[in-house]
Length: 271
Image 1 (tube, rainbow, N blue to C red):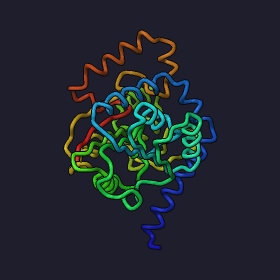
Image 2 (tube, rainbow, N blue to C red; image 1 turned 90 degrees about the vertical axis):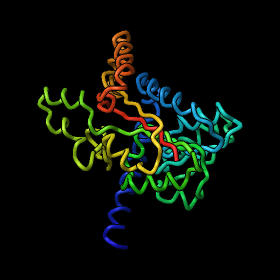
Image 3 (cartoon, rainbow, N blue to C red; image 1 turned 180 degrees about the vertical axis):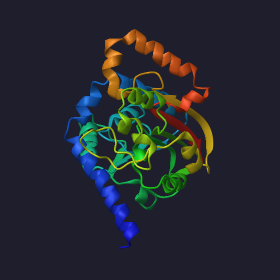
């Protein structure tokens, strides 16, 4: 094994280990009660179902919130879900079995071997929610894998943890938390936890469009520009009317340069 191959193997092993542990630390229960996370998730879904699909792949299914929702809503469609974490796959399997969902193929995998396992030109829709692609080792290579997996004219709905989260940067600068303020701007990012390190990368909108330059950009959207990010959900619960105004403000500025300065970005690409 070359040095480069070993580094890549170690990188993915660390990502897998992080999410295996996350699955045992209440990830599922925390997400279930997070209203801002659910609102953003619902908007992701509303955008996704605008497109025709019959055969769908989710990369980074986590505990299965979204694949369960899609498969239950569209029992006549075919779905495949993968996650790098075996523990997350187990949570998803339990969720699907508990609700007697039969139209999902589920297995543990990262993105590198999906073409070999699933075949070229297989899916008319691929979606990735809440930044699973931030943990891939090489975004350009991953874009190539997604291109091969999609049928001609197939759709990819992809979301990313944003590099230039302006509100957080300014707030942390005011608090003199310089390390936190600039954490996303380096080549690597350690994730949200203050006690555990997640091997990952934050991407600017320009970097994402460059990596997926072989696709046609259909639409784009930014999230939590002014609206509180999911990890500040208490602010939504404490002041729901203010949160509603901030959510609506986010919608109004999507056609300005500020659209790409929030917590997440979403892109719809067509092969």
